[in-house]
Length: 116
Image (cartoon, rainbow, N blue to C red; front, side, top):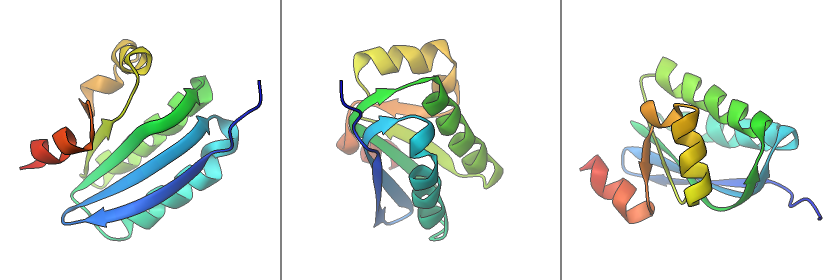
């Protein structure tokens, strides 16, 4: 199976930044993931949202990278919300207790509605 290269784009909205993630989140995703987070963080949003809709795979290193982003967000007193996770990854986020520290939403609209 061919690895899908990771990419991340940042969208700004009032009081929030959305990181649209694509491909596989593993060790090779770290530079692009951190760069996207820093770009979003520079706008000083109250909420950082991670869009996993186009993520095909997350390994244990990828989970650790997400934990690192969560730590940065908490240090800056920003909320972190995620959406677009498959049922499998929702379960992984619950097992690893990531769900205790970030809001998980079905889709972008429900994540935005929860901000209001």
